[in-house]
Picture 1 (tube, rainbow, N blue to C red):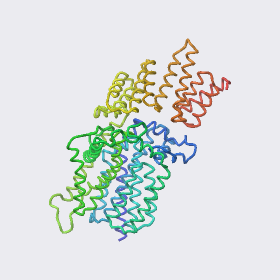
Picture 2: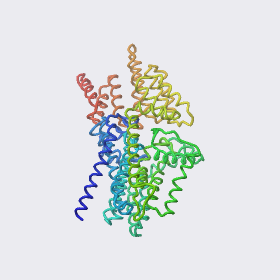
Picture 3: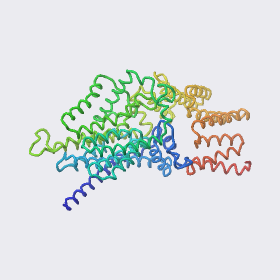
Picture 4: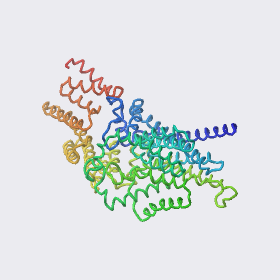
Length: 587
């Protein structure tokens, strides 16, 4: 028996090592990728250096509340600052850990359900490998901002392992770990709330006692209680604002037949991409057509079939896909993000990996399977793994740069304002101003744009005008942008930069030059009313005061930059300007 246990442990170790290494290798190309889309703003916003107290990260009244994700990115920021490689390494490692956790979950469940006579390790290995290689994960892993789904799933799986230990191994400490890891998962991303449903359903399926189900209910309820206490209830006001109003969660069509159609089409799109993960896009277009309604119904029919056949194992993992998809479907009736996102399928794909591995189900005792032998099943799974690996590698090519990603997105979804805006910004970064302006103009002509969308587009067009040195046009565009959204901090930043540029061009009128720099300071200070203590803003204000000869105020803002981001390039530049001010001896 001891020798058998040693062999089993050795096989587990080999499988775990293989899964971890393969997960790292497949996503190694991301180590050469840069910061994509809003990565730079996300990681700067996550800086723990700016926090006055270590617990400030847990204090938030906003709609998004993900303190553990912020802490994770903040730790990377403290080590790597804005060097992208460190963040990409962290993302890949978390994904590799998740793949290993899936192997552990699979091993425990398959062994205890006795689905596989002697091959549960092999089946667990392939289920974890399919998860590791699935192309739909490229967005979550290759995009630094996708850390939320990676981290939430990591703690989610830890909580599920703890649940399995409690139910199958009768380890009472599992209850405590369920509460802890469920709370951690919620603090990484709010969609983890579905764990409460899945945990209770699983307990019922394995015929847990009434006492066990009660204790599990108490455990998850305590976690939810702590989570609600930390979040407070101020954010609920956004949920109940008039749909479509500024700051509201719901869009203006949230209660219409169109919204129902979008929910059905979005769910069908996710099913399609889970099963056929090619032609991926960071901003997918909402699909439509009768075929998608059929695809929406099929999982429900299949779930009913599993229940009738009393195949609760397959039924549970299909239910995992359906239930874990629900929070993401709510985005389709919101106005806080794009309605579709492949990163939302990271957690649901866990269930898919288990369903696919059932193809490996061995022959039942004293029976033969004339359709698919065990070797044929292995061949199917291996082929699928190779296909997944090739599709993932190919998709990572689009994630190598911001320009490559948005060029690909613009081709696949030319009717999205977000796609056109970001492709325009990518064109702007390579100084193709005319093409960038064309993208912004086309986006602005699209229907159903929110005020926030219009404001950002007008700000982007102003950036083009500034680069073309058409400052009067840029100023008009920025004021129109702020009329659309008075809280658009980016427009205040651009306006301040515009006035700095305009002032620096004037050499023959000191009074007019001074007026422009004063207007720049005012614009930057307006932005601070909405997002205070931004280092770049402090640096620009310091430059303006330096230009105006107000060395005392200039020094105060340079000092603020050094205090908040002491190891940054801005801090080094601030030190150089402070040396100049000290030589002047005028503060």
